[in-house]
Image (tube, rainbow, N blue to C red):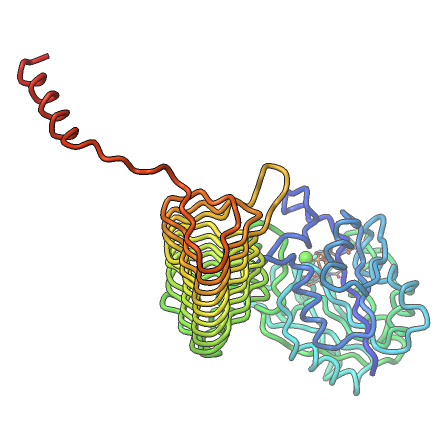
Length: 447
Ligand code: UD1
Ligand code: CA
């Protein structure tokens, strides 16, 4: 059956105490809204509607940067979750399939759980995702009658007996889109909060003779984020899961609790990651590489057999071919480094290409920026760049060429040549000896 996602993301998020809409706060380097979209993607949705309100423009922009085909529905004033769902009606006009409601602040629902809900929809008109809460707190309570879900009671409106129930509402609901909008239409706001509760659709559905059931999941999946403390708890949960998944995927993490992943980090088998490595977004690492301690990687691709770090920084556009070595205190940005090349110590390589098996000496810098424009450095194959060479871009160094240490290279170097660009050395015979004798004599006189 064709599926549409309705993701609720209009709320204020008052408890975040932030200028940023709640759903744009990040976990693993991506807005929590993107996490919700990613879990929903498991259902291969035909349409995705984001219901936005607070910060609607930037919420829409963030969602579109992940999936340009999404629709947004504007909920100008937030009158509750039922009212929010109703705003998606226009965007889904003529859609003939199931709709699943997700929350933008509930990022961890697993694909398998959504698949179980889709399966339950084959036998029931409305399916709600629920969980047994260790501490049910202020969650809505799921009230069962024999094998059917009979209604949902919000905490604020619940009596003692209902509050004692610990089967809780996650907020995720699935129904035929037409049915969902028809039910939402019938929801009123005569309750403790004066809001249009999405949760009321269950009681309404049952009174119309429709069937309703609950699919249960683990409480950790339905973790909702309302405060900075909950955001950091969610980050910790995300990191733990991702570390575990990396290990199950055949990656060695020497000290897993010190390694931080992004939402899209991809790492091949038999890679070793030493302690205190941080991944920003957009990193892919092939099998059999080693990432040594205290390295920071973002937007880069590392091929088989490469060794990075310790203390290396790879920035967006760093592309390392097989068996490349990047050593300590080396920064690489927007640069392609070909097979077997080495940049082992204290260098900046930006806007550059380095050919196969070239060796870049300690302290080499590509001077890529003139204060206004960025310029390119091209280094051929089997080049030897002497230590402490400044390569003033735009510049090309031909295959098999060499630069003398300490050179400031401003002109292209043809293949096979040596470039020397530094002051000539002159030695002054005996000068040092005479100089120090004079100074020591002065000191002995006590002056
Ligand atoms: C809701 C459920 C509750 C459930 C809990 C799970 C209702 C009435 N209650 O309560 O049963 O246990 O979630 O976390 O549905 N939103 C809008 N527009 C609005 C109101 C909310 O887009 O007018 C969005 C929010 O941005 C948020 C989501 O809907 O992403 C949930 O809203 P929230 O106010 O946090 O609902 P809860 O009170 O937590
Ligand atoms: Ca909430």
